[in-house]
Amino acid sequence: MRPLSVIGLLDLTTFFGGHTYDTGSPPRVSTGEDGGGGIGTAHIVAVALLALVTAGLMLWLSPSGARAKLRPAAPAALMAVIVVAPLALWAASPSGGDEKSLIVERATDLSGAPELIVYLGEDDLNTLRTTHGKKAVRVECRGRDGQVILDARQRWPFVSERGYDYPHVHQAASFEQLQRADHCRLRGTRVRLEGQVEGPVRG
Image (cartoon, rainbow, N blue to C red; front, side):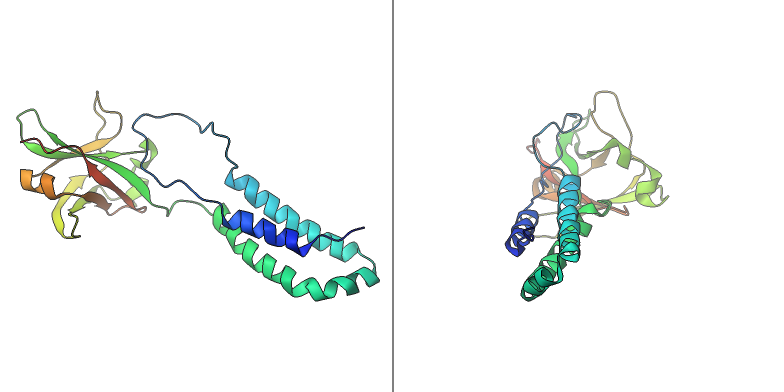
């Protein structure tokens, strides 16, 4: 029986380490389940673990002479395990702490006053669990220079209104704040929620 090549393990590590994730802004219209042809994280983790288990079994079942021949390759195999195992655990861990995006738009209300409309990109975030039971969050917006230009308290959960795709809040602001605002985030949530400010300044 031909033993598993150490180079194969290293190739597996390279493939797994090169896996990337799309962290772009959430779509404005829900598209349902992902129908793309990409390989899911669960499949990658399963393949990596299966390869490691298979390599261990083959080494254990090999005759003593074969084990002696494989002994010089043991350090390289150990390094492959050290690299793959943390990546597998990281990919399989819950994504609750990952950054999630907001949708923030410049707008004016019915009276013509300027405002920022802050949308939650996911309906299931609009619960008290997201704020650990707190019924208020802070909307913090910064300019391109990183300076805070708006910091306001808003009730939580956000409201759902007819004509709007997502739960949201209408944040009053001045025309100067709308012009300077570059990105906003929510303070007081268990996950990081932030997004770039979009739309022209109307005044």
